[in-house]
Length: 396
Image (cartoon, rainbow, N blue to C red; front, side):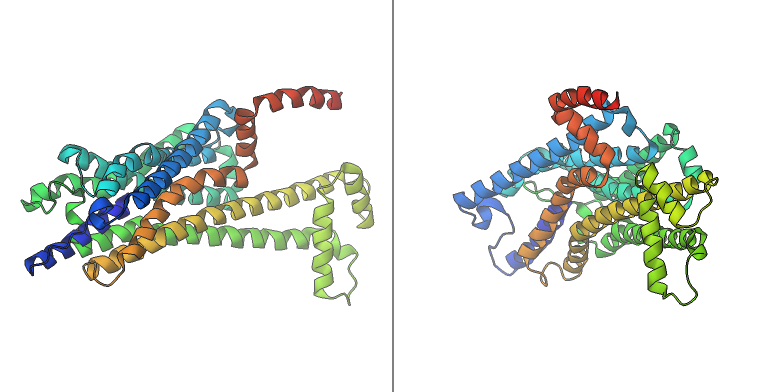
C-alpha cells in the first residue's frame, strides 16, 4: 500500500545515512528485517485473509448493483464507484505487494513498480474523493430534497462525476510518479526497492496531503454538520406546525411539550387506524385527512433523513480513523526523516488503510436496507423463492 511506500523510502534514507557512517543496517522488511518463518507465515495468512475479504465484499456490492435495478439510483452510483476502487486495492495492489513485504526485495522490475505506484496512489486517492462525493450527494438529498429527487434518474450526470473522481485522483500523484525522475534527472530508488521518487520532498507531501486528506475531511465534516443542522431545523418546524398547540396548556413545561410532539410523530407512522385515533386525540377535525397524511409524510421524511445522517456519519468516522493516523505520521516522519516515530507505529497506520477497503462493503448493508435486500437475494436465492408464495398468500 502507499503507506508502505513512504515507510520504505524513509527507512531507506535512514539506512543510507547510517551506511555513510560505516553501518551495515538495512531498512528492508521480511527476512532481511529479521522475521522468522512463523512471523512470515502469519503475515502471509493475514494478508491473504484481508485480500479475500476486500475482493469478495466489494465484488458482492458490484454484483448487487448489477443484478438489482432498484439500486441504480444516482446516489448509489457513487457507492459503486467506491466499491470499484476498494475492489482493485484487494485484487491488484495488495497481491503485487505481498512478495515485497515478505522478502524485503522488489523483484518485479521497474516497469511494474511504476504501474503499481500509479495504481496504488490512484485507488487510495479515488477512495477519499468518493467519500467526499457521497457526502455531498447526501447533503443535497437533505438540503435540496425536491430538486434532488427530480435528478435521481439522470445517470449521465452521476457517471460524469464518477469519471471526474478518477481523473482528479490521477492528476494528484500520477504525473509526479511518472515524470519526477525525468524532471530531476536522477533516481533515488535502488533496483531491489519500489517507492515514489518524491517521498523525501516534505513540502510536496504536505501539499498533496492537504488535497488528499485535510481538505476532503473538512468538506465531509461541513456536509455532515449541515445535514444535522438541516434535520434539526426541520424537526423544530414540524413541531411548530403540528397539532400540539391546540392541546398544550399555558403552564405545561417545555419538556412535556417536546415529549408529546415526539409521541405524535411516532404515532403517525403506525397503522392507519391508530394514526386516525391519535389525530382525534389531537382534536383534529375528521375531514382533514390530507393534513394528517401530509404530517405523516413529513415525519417519515425526517426519520429517513436521520438514517441518512447516521449512515454518513458511520462512513465518515471509519474514514477518519483509518486515514488520519497515516497522514499525520507520514508528514511527521518526512519532516524528521523517519527518526522521530517508531517504525512499528507506522506499520499500524498503513494496515489501517487496507482495513478501510475491507470495512466499507460491510457498511452498505448496515446503513442501507436496499443493499441488504440485494445481498439477501444474491446469497440466499432459495430463501427468496420460498418467501414469495407466503407473501402472495398473505396479500390475498
